[in-house]
Image 1 (cartoon, helix red, strand yellow):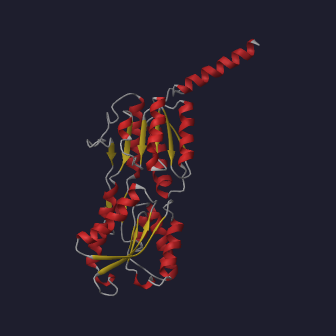
Image 2: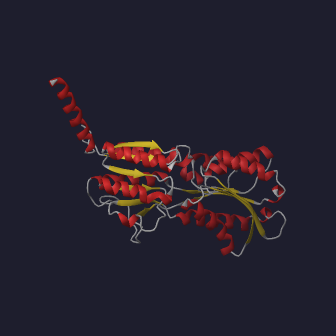
Image 3: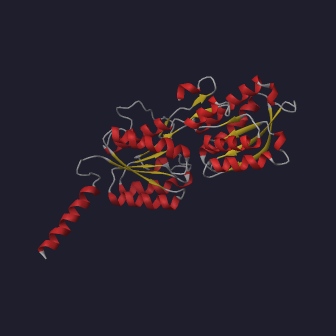
Length: 336
C-alpha cells in the first residue's frame, strides 16, 4: 500500500512539474500548431524554422498538425493547456474563430502568439492583454505582385494576344475568407486598374489547401475550355498553385505569363528556367523567428519585443508585420 501511495505521489509531482510548463531541464515549453502540414509554405518553410530557431534559443517547441480543422485545433489547445505549456503559438485554421482560442488562453492565464493567420473578429485581440500577432500586411503581397505584372505587361506588348489593350486573366485563389487570399486577389488586379489598364477576368477558382494539384487541375481545365486560347495572364495567390499551373501549361505545350507568392525554392528554379515570371517573398523564416521571440518573452513575463528588433504596430492590432519582397528575373538569385 505504501508503495502504491508513493507511486501516486511521484506521478502527481511529475505532472505538477510539467504543468508549470517546466521540464526537468527548466526549458520554456511552447505549444504550437500548423493549420495544415499539407500547406507547402507552412510545412516547408515556417515549421522547420520554428523548430530550428526554438532549438537555437534553448526552448522546447511542440508542433502539431491541425489538418485544416478548427475543431481539431480547439482540442489541441485544450491538450496543451492540460499539459501546462508556458505559452501558445497558434496558426489559426479559421481566422474567424480566434476568439475561441483567445478565451481558452485567457482562462488558463497562458500567453498566446497567433501567427500567419490574423484574427478577423472585431475586438478579439483587445479581449486579452497577453495575446499578440505575427504575420504580414495582407494587402502588401498583392500590391507588389500587381506592380510586377503591370511593369512586365507594359514591357511585353506581345502578351496582349488580340491587341485589344485588355488583360484577360485567370486567377488561382487560396483559401476563401483567408485575409491573405482575399487581399492578394483584390490588390493584384487593382494594380492594373490603378495603372489605367483594363482587365477582364475569364475565371477564378479558390482552394482551401492552396495546393499544387488544384493549380494543375484548374489550369488544365481552363486551357481546354472555350476561353482557353484567350488567356493572357495567370495570377496565383501562392507558389504552390503556380507550380501546378506551370505543369499544366507544359503538358499543353503552352507558356503563359505566370506569377506566384512565397518565393519558395522551387519557384526560384522556375524563374531561372523561364517558367515563372515573378513571385513575392513571404518571409516565413522571419515570421517563425518573430513568433518564437515573442513567445519566449511572453513566457518570461517580459515585454514581448524586449531585446529583439521586432516592432509591434501602434495601430491596435498588436501585430508584428514582416515585410514582403518582390522577386523577379533580375534578383531571384539573391534568394537562392
